[in-house]
Length: 284
Image 1 (tube, rainbow, N blue to C red):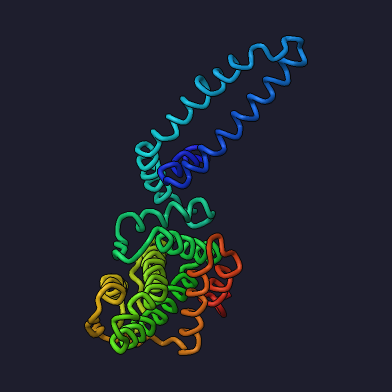
Image 2 (cartoon, rainbow, N blue to C red):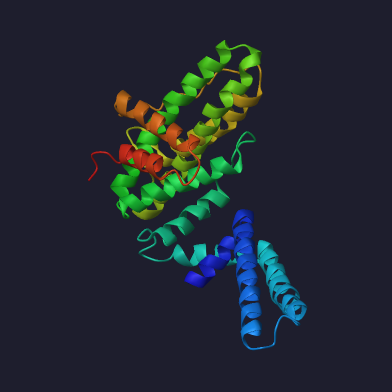
């Protein structure tokens, strides 16, 4: 399982680049050691080119080609791992399993808007995984985190819509950082709702709001984010309020904690911990 999980990560371009760099370093070290052994054995350095040919053409090049082949092989491996993990009772019991459970809905159901970059995709995944790992499979804690994130999103999108409508066209780029942070939080919240409903075996429910309505609200928010970021004349945000029972200060602190995490380059361990502490505060 561990080897297959590592191989499945090679579907990501950055993971393949890191693996290729590691392979190059290992081959360079192997070549250097070969030269040292040859010199120490009395063979001298007469066959340095032969050693270079072996390490370069016969070892590095085939392995590098194999790494690139995983661009198409790895996604299939990962989908099989996700399907296998989804049947396990302890699927939220370890970080490795949680990552697979998050990747399922992230790949199937979360549609990121055009304004989003791979960084927002990664932040949504990292944030959701961190919350689920801290919750240790406790559905009540996951529900609390999802509801607090929903409350933060409701306030945030309303504020951004009114702010954007009041700004001149020249300020359109000033919206992007906030909008992208909102995108990643909305995506992370969809993942938390999916994890809650999978773990609890029932729909999310808070007051008159159920999981389907919450997901529809988040999808509408993600669609609206492109208008917020890219359109000069922003149409009003017309989705009805969620009427969530979340303290306004906690709602705003959740937004601020996520924004700090979103704007901090990964791994952003301290900022991520601060966000997780905020959405799970008082649940232990």
